[in-house]
Length: 620
Image (cartoon, rainbow, N blue to C red):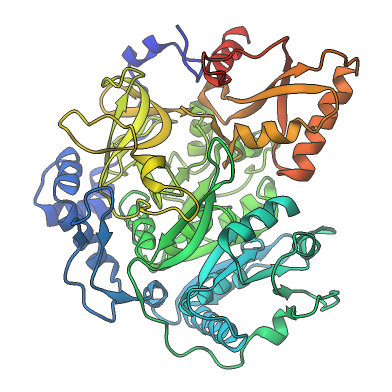
């Protein structure tokens, strides 16, 4: 019998290879060791149990450790009067999370930045605070009001970080858009978020090449735009304004105070049908980001976190809060992260943590991009977005003198991870060795029985978990129809498949539903399939993810022709790729097209994506 990763289920009985073991000194210097002292426990297993059974104490301890600032004092951690499916975290406080982002010494480094082909620069905490305040003041001068949603379509740069924080400081809500989105996807998300404005660039520059951004904003019929341009040569619409004219001379001297439940960020997560889910992060979600980074990635003041990502995906905002709330610096490289120049930036920036999606590791390995570089300053790697290949991860660990990889798996609606790693336990490449602190889960099979292989269900409550959706019924999406836990707990759907391994390890098995991660980007089968029906001669398709050797997912499309079509298969496959590139995301590549006479369906006529995945896996 084979599962979706291509590994036999009997592998769970095989001994795992331990690829990294912490020294007593490394354990004693970790943030987890400090937390164990506070909790009064001797083992990590007891610590995790304490964090779940005493979740209010855990989050109170994390909040105090991070130094989160409140203008109205914290009196309660959570209000459960509406039940565990609708907790209200920090119900009595007034706060603006941006005020806690500048707690490091003013002269310390906040951002290390390099544009592709350029020189490395640094920005101090004081400089970032001033630039953020000038953005917030500019937002106010432009007539935006607290609560307005303001979109961002741009790469991760110094300006991007300041804009994101400035939007929140002004009491507005940042709307995260990936800079790879096509106009149709931009338009949909602007409509769903009711965005009142948008920050963008004229183009993205990659050496001598440029990729247009503002033209896509115009085509998407976006609201008024603030446009960053190197030369100011932009054909603005009426109401649009250049960045240089927008930026206020004097910074905002205060922050708009909000309740804990007020949104700071609107993000999008693909469901299996229809529009993407519109997920608001609140003032408390960044605390989950920072606490995870503090205890799982073991981030300390003065560290440098490099994680190639985008403001349009949750790891962009996560990186901002995980760094700044921990008094660490953000390492930003504005360019393709696949080559030697990026890898040299990791070295020269003094990065202590390097985050990535697993497909990047394969690219570095194949290109020899790390040859001759010294990554010994790294204390750890962290991997998210895709299933990891153990062989690739062992290669990665060796590039820094055998440093651990903290696997990190969660979602936009979690604000971080539900399963991850800890630096105080041995690590086996490509696996997880702990649920996230403050959170727990069970694995259930299709009969809703506890199983070593099956679907993940989260045990609530936990700070960071979403409690509302802006365009769907939150209870129906996450709680309706879920079975009770083994002790009657309320369980929350998540959709990942997971395999429990010996001695407290787990391995990701991809998605249990029809959603997939391609290059670290979550997308539904339905989104891909709707687009492919535009290709002449195609009757229907089923998009599935194939993860060879448990590694990053590849897109496989099962395709049925129309009865009267005689087009060449090769030309149709090219047309399919072109539609995905131009209307969905140019980063999504079709790995294989499988031509079939019909698609397998359930009695209710639903396409059996899981059966197709298993069929493809069995035949390769």
